[in-house]
Image 1 (tube, rainbow, N blue to C red):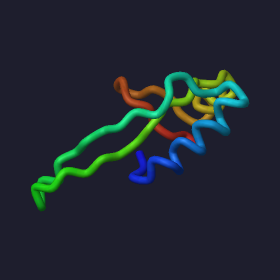
Image 2 (image 1 turned 30 degrees about the horizontal axis):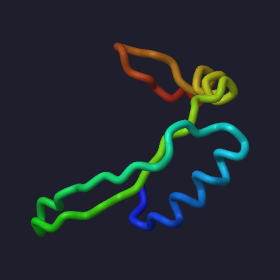
Image 3 (image 1 turned 90 degrees about the horizontal axis):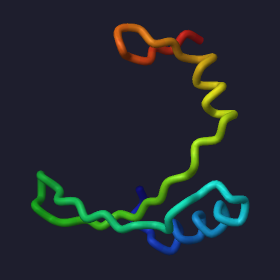
Image 4 (image 1 turned 90 degrees about the vertical axis):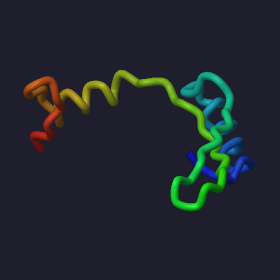
Length: 71
């Protein structure tokens, strides 16, 4: 999440060209509990690539239904 909408859009546009993002950026409004002010953030999600899933499997094992880093 970033506050700078043009920056998020720019990164999204770059990643879209290589095909690893889905839906365009969304806005998220969050209330700061300390101040009571609202802040707007922008975000998007990337697709999970099989390469990263393979790395995750090498670096983490599941113990008591939690992923624990082994390296």
